[in-house]
Structure formats: C-alpha cells, structure tokens
Length: 435
Ligand code: ATP
Image 1 (tube, rainbow, N blue to C red):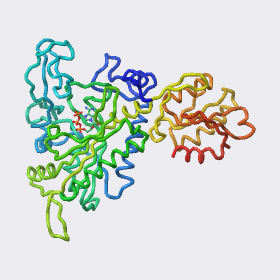
Image 2: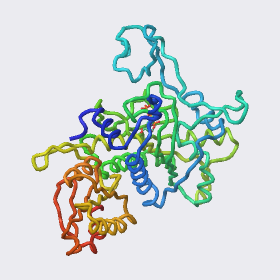
Image 3: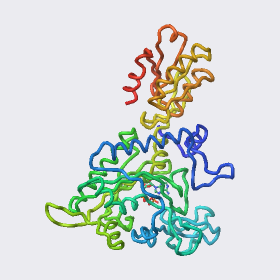
Image 4: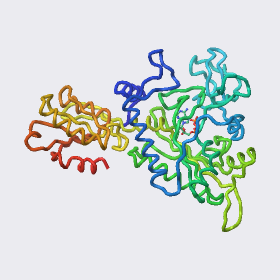
C-alpha cells in the first residue's frame, strides 16, 4: 500500500531526516526544501540510477555539466523570454493569485470560495531574473536556467566534435533548475528551485517518431525497474493545446499521487526548433554534416526530461507500507535496494566491549562498499523498526555467538527472514542480495 496521504510522507520525511522545510528556523519557505542525511543519499542514488541507465550503460549517450547562468541571449533565442509563462489569475476578493490551468474550478477561488471574482488571465513569465555584476540595469539582466536542456543545445557542437559522436546520439545532464512558480506546493512536487535529469537525443528527422516511441517505453521501464508499482505509473499523451512552444508531440510519465495522476517526466519531440534557432541567432552553423550523403541538416531532438526531487517524492510515496510483524504494527519503506539511503545496518546485540570490537571490524569492511549505519541504542526490535521505516534492506546483527562462530545474522527488511552467515562470506552474500 502506498502512503495514504501527503501528511504521512511529510511527517516521516521530517522525523527521519529525509526532507526539512528550507529556512525552517525563520519560519520556512514554502517554495524550497532542504534534504537531510537520508534525503541526500536518496537523491544521490536516484541520480546514479539515471546516469547509469542513460550514460554509462549506453555507447550513444555522453554527459555534460553546463552552467546555471548563461548569456541572456540563450533564453531570448530559445523562446523562453517571450513564451515561458503560465496563465495567472487574481481573485479580486481575497487578492490571492493562482495558475489558471491548475484550478479544479476556473470560476471559483479555492481560498475564499467566491465565484466569478477572477481577473482575466495574463501570462506570467516563470524565469527567475537576476543581475550580473555591480550594476543592476537592463544590460546586466540574467536568468537562472528554467531547464538544463539549453545548456546542452548551445554545447551541441562542442560535445559532438570532442566526443566524436555520430547521429543518432544523446547528451545527458543532471542539475538544478529554477522556476518562479505561481503556486509552489504539494511538498517537494512543485518548488521554485528543483533538480532535473534531462537528455537530448539527436537523430535524423525521419527517425524522430520512432525514437520518440523508443524513449517513451525506455523511460517508463526505468521507473518499473526501480520497483514502482505498475498500477500507479503510466504514460499519457498531451493534447495539442497542452504542447510547449517548442514541441511537436509530448507524452508524460505520470504517477498516481495522493491527489491524483500527475507528471513525473515529460518526453517531448522538440523537432529541430532549438538547434535551428541557435544557429540562426548566433551565426554558428549547428547542422549535422552527413559525409556519406554529402548533406547538411538540423537533427531532430527527443527529450526525456525528469525531475530528481519530484521522482524521489514519488518513490517515497510508492515505497511506503504498513504491515504487522509478530502481532506488532510497523511502517516499512519498501524502497528498491539501489535507492535505499542506507544499504546495511550493523547492530550489536549489546554494548559490551567484545561485541563493539567485532561490530567495528564488520562495519569497516562494509563501509568500503556501501552506505551503512551502526546503531547500538535501544532494544533490537526497536532498532529493526527504525531501519524498516527508512527502507534499509538488510540488518546485520552481531550477538554473543559471533565471538565463537565468527558468524552474524542477516535480517531482510520485507519478510523479516533471518539467515546466519560467516563474517568471511558477508560481503559476497550482501553483494548478491543487494543486486
Ligand atoms: P508543469 O506543467 O507541471 O508545470 P512542465 O510540464 O512545465 O511542468 P517540464 O518542463 O516538462 O515540466 O519539466 C520536466 C520535469 O522537471 C517535470 O516532469 C518535473 O519532474 C520536473 N519539474 C518541472 N518543474 C518543476 C518544479 N517546479 N518543481 C519540481 N520539479 C519540477
């Protein structure tokens, strides 16, 4: 069973150190969040799973890490300065502002309940503006990137040439993006500062549709491979009216959040919009030269664009479960071992010196491979529950028999089954079990 509501996950996240409200000691800032020890590990594991699937395991995709702040001209050329906006309405009764396309009822204010009090919608640009250097006038305007994709397009030729890539090929990037969202909310689902994992896959125009289908399937499969419930994740094609200014077709990977189906990732056919626009505006020819056919053309681009922070949230909801063990209720996060922040907990049965010495020895061995935690406080039952609640796949218990037989007990999270394994075989056993 996934988390029944938002509060369950918000409370668990805060209580156990996944996510804290940003600037909490000053009252909090609804539009950003800080990630604690476990949250930081979860994000790292997610990035790692994506990078591995998208870059390391493929020979047709390479990585990049571009700057957050680029020339303002990038956003003029890409169309973001003119078009990257959401429809804003204001209630003339309570003066609260809303994003029109996200309202359940476009005639009723969700805050004060008045009907027919909204102003005409006006486009509100989502880019966060800043000034570079000591003079804050028009000439110093710059933007914090609202997507990582443009950093890829403007480096297309640098990467293609230096990595010696031929069509079809992709460039992948993970990094922070910023959007001045009208209504941030639903915990980390929509924030003004967030992190994206984006890949631009360049191909021949006539092959774009086929690659689009390929990436739709591949990206859905990625969530399933990481353990997401197939009943709660799906693909949905955009209506024409929903398409972004650069897209010929888009489908979203959606997750069934506690409030309903919502976007996890957008997979768009961006055509040749960006490369063509940057070529024309910069004067640098970004067409691909096909030596065999002796022709130049603008590649089409298929873009799977996912959120790191948003999918971390979805995986937390999806992994949440409550069950009963030995007549006692427990909360367990059934996170895939690749995503689990702590892979192994090492738990000595007592704080006696002899057990602590073996614990340190075992911990030192495991630490070289995995993020582990040593926990010596409270009853063993309480310690198991604590690990279950944060999704630790395995607990290794060191007891008094260990001193004689040099063996430990491994307890598995989901079934609570236990096996006794010699310390000498522990790493091998866990390597297989963690997958
Ligand atoms: P929406 O319509 O919900 O505002 P979008 O369609 O504009 O989102 P994309 O531009 O497709 O979003 O962004 C790709 C991905 O980046 C999203 O699927 C999401 O995972 C993530 N993302 C976008 N905006 C935010 C945000 N404000 N907070 C957290 N993640 C975001």
